[in-house]
Each structure stands twice: as structure tokens, then as C-alpha cells.
Amino acid sequence: MQKRIALLYDFDYTLAHGFMQQFGLMQDLGYNDIGEYFKECERLAHDNEMDMCLSMLCGILELAKRNGKVVTKEYLRSFGKDIEYYQGVTEWFDKINAIGKAYGYEVEHYVISSGVKEIIEGSAISKYFKRIYANFFAYKQGVAFWPSQVVNYTSKTQYIFRVRKNVLDDLASLDKINAKMPEDEVLPFKNIIYLGDSQTDIPSFKVIKNSGGMSICVYEGNNDDARKVAQKCFVEGRCNYFAEADFRETSDLYSVISDYIKTVCKNN
Image (cartoon, rainbow, N blue to C red; front, side):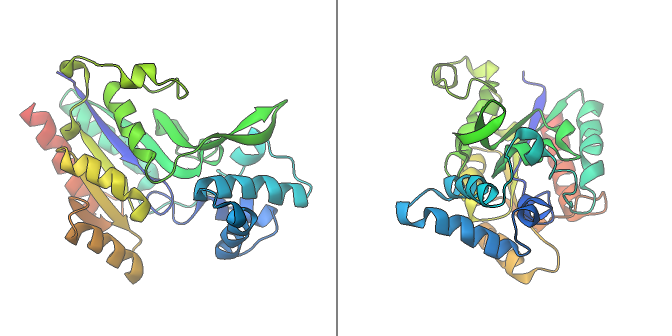
């Protein structure tokens, strides 16, 4: 019996109060508005019908070049330290871990994001994640020169299966992730919770929900448009639940997830 529970998180507007690029990177590349920053990234790749994540990575390299910046891992990680989080996020992980531990379960936390891995690695909460799956660069002599991995809205789902099979590394290899494994070695879907906030999470929402796990669409408080997106995901059957992205013990989200974890632990 697998005595572990996996929480999978999108990052921007799920844990972070905004896009990770807006807490220093975009300003260093000459922008004060996140919308204009992303539009410029899109313009750089528009004529080539480029994937949105490749467009974002291409934009970082091109805008850095324009501004005389050298893109290294250290440069990108430096913009993680000032990320702002929703209420309760920084205390969340220890509290949730304690719930699992009380029942003899290990709670694992993973990020599956279409943001920038190196920025997340520089964040105050990176230490809580067993793995961070996100877009990242290949480096030559310490300088970024090309995208190494791209995590877009459909490719997010492959990382769900990596977590299930505990095949967490060797991203370039298909052998281990596609290998047939005994069922008792694979984490049941009911032991997986996925948190996201938008349409880019819908394929992951559906995989988890339709397979017996828990998927939750969160939304920024006091943002009516975001709430409508989350509610629509729920009404259309894409997720099991929707809630404000408030991670404090007094919140609806905390209650739903803590109760779900306790139920899984008691019923196994």
C-alpha cells in the first residue's frame, strides 16, 4: 500500500499572487506592465506560430540581449526571492505535512507550471517541493542559449504520471515513464490532489478528476473574472471543486484539502 499523498500545484495565480515574471524580471528587462511584457514576447514569435511557452522563453533571451543582460541560472533565480504569495502559503506546507504524518502518510508537494523553473527555484517556498516541473533553459558555459524543457497546458499531464510512477527524473527518456509497472507500485489517483487556476490547467484537472483524484480550481479573492473562470470549470465538470486561493487554516480551501487527506488516509 502506498502511504503517500501527492499535491500538485500550478504556480502563477495558484500559489503566487500574480505572474512570477512581474516580481523583478520584467522590470529588469524594461517593462512595468505584465501585459505589455507578454505581448512583446508574443510579438517576437508571432510569425512562427510558436508555442506560447517557447514564445515566453524566446522573449526572455531576446529582451535580455536588447538590454545587455546575461541570462544565467543565478540571474533568473534572483527574481524568485520577491514573489508575493496568497495568504497562508508560506505556512501551508508544514501544516499539511503534519496532517499526513498523524496518519502515517508522507505528503509530497510538486510544482507543474508553465512558468520558469529557475525563478521558482529562487523562491522562498522552493524547499518544500520534491520536484519543480516547469520551463527551463539549456546552458552553455553557464549562459542560457535554448529551451531545454517546455511545459505547456497539455504536456503538464505527463508529470502527473511521473509522480504516480515515481519516475521523477530522466526527462529525456521515454523508457521508464512508459514501462509497465505492478499496480501496487503506482500511486493511486485518489491519493493525488491537483490545484490550478485557469484554462491551462483543464487537461490536468480532467485527468485527475476523471480518474478518481481531487482537482480544485482556485481563484484570486476579490477578482470576479477569476472567480467566474473557476466556477465555469466546476460547472462544466472539469474539476471537483473551486475555492478562493486562501491557504490559511480558516479557509474553505484548507478545510476541503485537509478533510480529503484525512479521508484518504482513513480509508486505505
